[in-house]
Image (cartoon, rainbow, N blue to C red; front, top):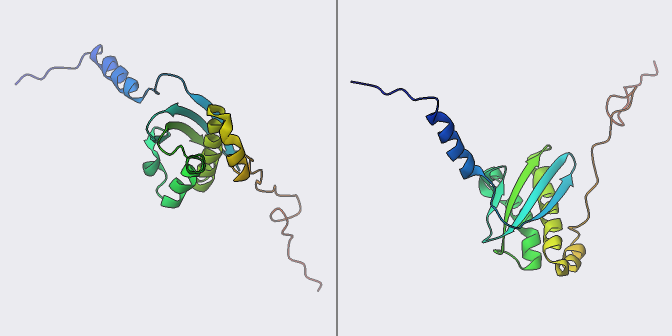
Length: 154
């Protein structure tokens, strides 16, 4: 039996084919970013059939909890654009819930860019406002942000 060795020239060609499969869609898109706590979501909104991709995975695969998928899709439900746009997103930092809320914020901002007539309905629902609540920092002399050490009088 003869075993063919893989040449160094054939390996890069395979890698190029894999990269082209992961390459983002070409064409016009609307860009926006959303934030929540320490999560940042960078959104690209393409005209399409309603696919949502998060960090190169399907949204249902990335967010396993169904309520988070519903949370992400709320801007589309409010504007009535359920299956009109594809979303490609890169999300970093924070927890799963925080990432979903950052993604929702980014999608909302991208929908306003796509059609400015969406702004009043999204504003009324409170989705355009960035939720600025973050964890309070720990202060010196305390155990946490506000909890002090136990005090004993005697």
